[in-house]
Image 1 (cartoon, rainbow, N blue to C red):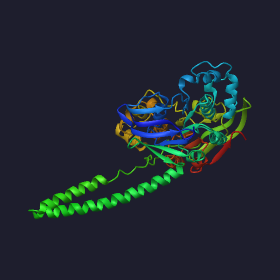
Image 2 (cartoon, rainbow, N blue to C red):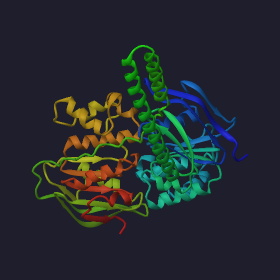
Image 3 (cartoon, rainbow, N blue to C red):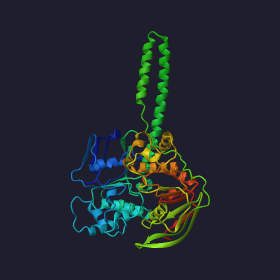
Image 4 (cartoon, rainbow, N blue to C red):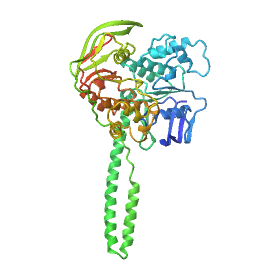
Length: 481
């Protein structure tokens, strides 16, 4: 039945590694609703999904799921232990029991996500955008009553996002989506669950993201006004209390009542909801003494009709020159970037001694077994940990986070660690593959400003036009043209 509650969190608390993620969270999800789950990087949004699926158990309270409700999750990234699987094996793992004659089901779901994929091809051979479609397909093929999507637009090109949006608009069942893409969410959601990282509470709102931002702004304004009025009354009572106290005698009783009144008013003050913190403005320093041509590319390989095709090029980058690489998912953008980083492109020359700063979309340049402080300290000549910690703090990497293993961070936090490493590395050539993925949208203008000012050579791949528009671009190469 529509509007029937199928998921209810009843005073649910959850702690991880002595850190409170949820504090008596109370909310419900109704059948056939489409909800956005939002909050700052590392707040614990993915934890809520794991509590719904039963992967995690609450420290206190109850997660009540309707009996027999089937739930499927499309994760942010494909687990590393599944990268060697074939497409057929990947989809077979989606089911607890063996599914006979699964190939027609795979074909149907791949058509739904607009992906052409041979069933015997390995998962790792697909591009980031194609893997994003596989993740979505892995949840859809289960035909769940509740579909959980964790950052589904990451790596998707414009066509992929449009295709996904239409699917969700037409989707007849319940869906909860974690995303930092406000325009995407506004196209189909009708409610927002907001996980406040500061108080570990979940706030529920009706309407889309823009409605929620407006409602929160009005609420904060009212709370500020109320607190200002209370502060004025508190100060007046304190002054009167001090005045009567000094008079002595019976007036001390009056002073006591004034003090008690001030304390009562203090207790009426409301805790104003704090906005998500944003990272501090930063600069990626360029390698010293850059001169002449930094990189030259005379040809590159693309994938067309499942075949490698060599295309001639005349790409030359010097200091302060920024190149944008464009093309649909699967054409070979990441392959080209990686060939430059590894020195495997025979048709590309990078000047001797140039340090390459590489932001890879799957964060595989990071050692997941290192702590954050180990990762940052290992690539810098800054000898004092205080400087490393100060730079890390600018990216909201502080407190216990800096002692945490990279593999235990949220995807958004991994992205911020990757940017902190670039600041410390001081590269001469900056190569960025989808640097907006997983990142809180509030951070994106600050990141764009840093890239805009970068004074080395830069090669950028991004499917987010609003982000690219804020960055100085000197050359554009469209791989499919």
